[in-house]
Image (cartoon, rainbow, N blue to C red):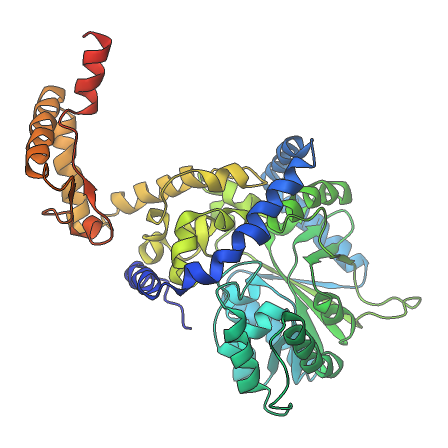
Length: 474
């Protein structure tokens, strides 16, 4: 599925997803696999809220001194025999990775799950240069077979059902027995492992993302529930880490604290199955590991967020708790958001990276119920920042004309309390009379976008302010 990061395409994407109805069916397991498990894991840790506060302060401190910690991290990587490459934008990051691959004569590249590689469009760039990228994360492998992008940042194929995956495996894995049994989830997993094993052994370069970069040691950290990330960075001759600049944290102790809230928030585990620290290339005494170790640090607009009302977004540790709990995401799925980052975190981060002119509808795709902020382990004020983006959109006249004029019309009355109270009382009584037989409106002039999907309840006859005055005796 191609993505279209524009406001117009978001509305089209969302409408198609709602009309199709398959997304809510595919996401029915999110409650059991993510939401319920998170509740149990959090309840079992009395100090969880204290850890959230600590994690927030660690990241706030790091962002306030980001330049210093990046310099420290770079020096430690060099001390361990590795190389650090800074990339201003996606094009520079893609070219750095391609140059490294070309220098070592790479033909095949294995990849661990990396949202940054998705952000920069790395796979297509490598393929155009004659290098075959192979996704090794099970979810990423499945969507690569389908030619799709991830619909979730930790469960890329969450939008698919088991039957859909079985059909894709039979379509692509034509060299296997056509009569094989793929009815069980384990059989699908076993088949994927079998197909990927030869890719791991043949790869010249392994590319991973990084959940954290540790300034104290020059280490990169990946947090996974599959062993593919370890195989990707250990077996090939060259290991390339791609990460954005805000992933750096000061010390090992800091990482240890944040890890205690990450897995609990993401998958409801105390710790993920694999938490792997990598520091430089293979040493003389090591039994395995890469001969070369490279880190590509991407900015791509993040430094411009520092010191602004959107800086808090850089605390995000990509746990996906916000989208797991978002009622809008559950109805339209991740692909509707049109770019790499879906859900509430994407509604804030995407306009920051590609511009509110291209992603202005995303911060409007929210009920402002506040669940995203309440479950965020880093206490990121997502609704507040979405409101900031709405303000930016309005200031630049990017809203539809109907919305702008409608708000201006409302503001005219709201600035005159006596007129506002009079007009709302008249409107409420008139609507009560008009809808007294049905109890609801299925269509209203100027509110077609609302009544297309839901009914408009008939007012009781008096406004809230009028009822409040009566009860208050005023």
